[in-house]
Image (tube, rainbow, N blue to C red; front, side, top):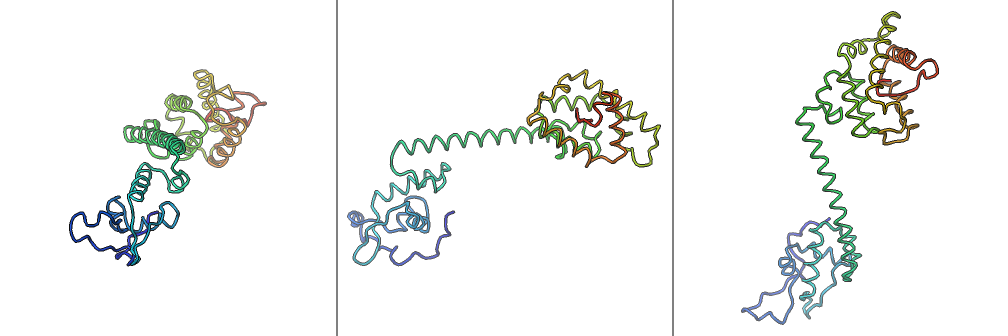
Length: 275
């Protein structure tokens, strides 16, 4: 961080102006003159002295500093590297060897390229969010179906987006689009007072919807397909999320649906996003 500029330079930073052009040609520059020529501040020059980035100049008999061309060249070089984005700590380690400088600049270029790529991805996602009017609590591209999702569904979708790739998320969006809207509303309305008959009927509807998803998207049956994290981690996260986000009655409907779809052996096993 560049220290703040002092309102007045220290006494030894002052040097009298030459009485006529060329009179000071054999003398050096004061700290203020050096800073002005390099486009920086007096305090920055002093800071570079303190951290060993810029050599101290000679002094006249009266104590005034006398900077030479090598100091100005060094200061301009430091400023250029800082403007390119090189941290001071890395500038300190550079020295004056061309190979060392080139290596550091290549590293910096790679870091800048990665940063530009991150910014481009962020801009693309922002454009999609604005174009589709997607709420921030659902992944990009889910704007058209977000209104059909309850609070728990949206939270679960956000969690699933952390361990499914883009193709899988696109398929999940198509699954939501394919489900009858009244099925989502009916499932969201399930509560402790929902009777057995209603739970069983709803479970059968959910099972049919899940069966349709598995037929349309065969990768759902493949544990490693389109996941960005190990299956064991996905399964644990899904089970914990389902337990935390949905009520007991809703989980009961989902358990019944799994029984209808897979049979007794698979009960309670997380599968596709609605299981």
